[in-house]
Image (cartoon, rainbow, N blue to C red; front, side, top):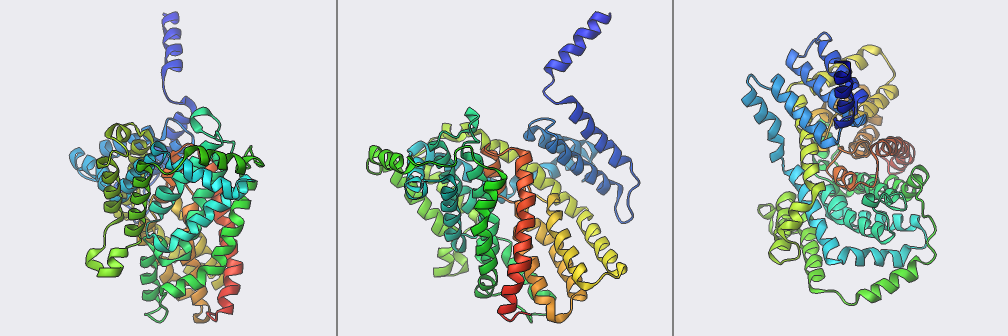
Length: 501
């Protein structure tokens, strides 16, 4: 009997696909939080949803199992416990509803489109071109990616399309050209560093232009509301206010990432000659490369809302519709085939885990958890009697770091920003209100740095496998603090010079 039990225990230890101790910790979090008294202002079901969300985040951080499995766990527990509805049928409909979210499909389709760059060889050609210009040092290639991101930002309303659909395939091609590949366990050569630069250029550029990310117009609307239309951020005003602090962040970011995630290959003295030799060997552009270039040009123009600009808003196209058009173009021209689509595992993995996190964030908002949190913060600040500068700092910090609870910047801004701006408008003197509002506007983009699910771009780059989860979160936290300090110093001085306070 003892031998049988021992054999079963040994089999269980060797066969189970999860890490037992982290799994026990995550399970303890689930039951521990759920067993706590329900806070005033929340329903038991809303508190159960909080328990599931926290457990999912803990399980992901502790790497209990692959992130997609943890996402399925969240979907299953939410449906079984019926915390979003009164029947399992309605609950599973709620949990699967997020998979119809256009943002999620924009991410998936962007990953599928990027496969064409690799298959046609255009990605390698672009990579070698960047290396031929800036390839003497790895950090120089990082600056090339940052410049590319910055140039595209004013014309690409979807930061996901820009950072994940355009810049990321170029970054992967450059990394592969140096033999840096997660599948070969060589991502540390240059790929980890370049992936982080690729990502962290995206929030900075998103902060610099109204048209650089989809939620920015919503921020403009909220700022106008809390000031009774007395301060309105036009395209030019936004760009001018964010110009200097944004450029400082963009200029220093590749160096800071270099210190935080130093690549194994730092000097590449022969890279320029090597790249030029490879470009010569590739010869002129092939027909399928021309198709890829034409598809990317079409995507860029449509993502930049050129038809709406020329012919009116009736001709505006949703970014996901544009991405689907690009994918279909590649399929019907034979640039990629259906087997390529089916074999792109990272796209379908992203669909599962990002969809689950978006679902949880949406259900938390619908259950009133986010409003409960915001109302409690407002009451606490007003009752504390703290000075207005301290209150303003708390509002900015809490708003930014509460993005750990969100898988969408649009959802976060929609749920919390107006409440935070309203509290600030009551506490901050009129002469200093504008810089507070500008700090909040900047924070709405800076918060994208924090997690691998913070915005649509992050799961694309994280899903490519160049950066571990722990490193992503560590660098994200440091970058958030760094960018806040730049905007709170350079930004405030710049806004003073412009006469905004």
